Image 1 (spheres, rainbow, N blue to C red):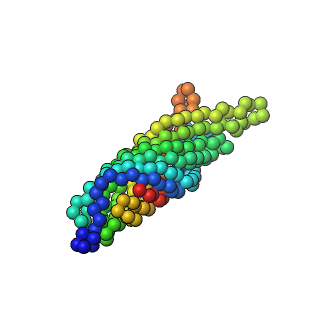
Image 2 (cartoon, one colour):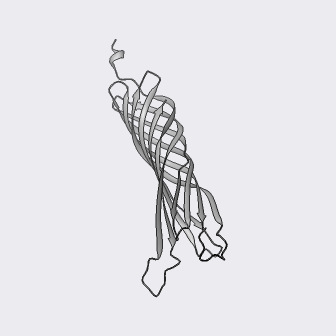
Image 3 (cartoon, helix red, strand yellow):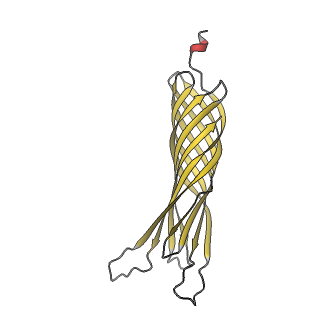
Length: 213
């Protein structure tokens, strides 16, 4: 009888699936080809774009409860999305960025509430697959050929941070609501062989996730 009124021990391995909604954004910086060094003008052009899409993924982890008032844990996860963000850079030339999959490794710390609930904060390393393209399809006159579409693909190292609320449904099942921010940093994509024109694209993401584990 005394055991039944104590808070549940949240220590142990866990595995979860999750779905959610995310907003991805990309800021593109490029040298201004129309800038005249003898006149005042902007040296760089800044363009921004964002996109809202659903996402899904999973996570595994291990938590250790320290007494009744604190919990620490480690986790690894994977998320998938198809965010596609495009913005005009020069006239109608389009620079696009697309997020694909993301691997995460991190730590979390939380405070148990009541018998089976947990409030926690999390943070760690993220590795995202990022695709970029540049479509120079605008010409100065009708005799010019349309510009080709340049495509790039790479992986980005970054970080994530977030917080959430977890509720035990039974002794072995929990549900959670979580917010996570991810910064994938920036990447440089050269558009010509002389490296006179290059795009710097900085990408981040906001997620709200529902999980069951």
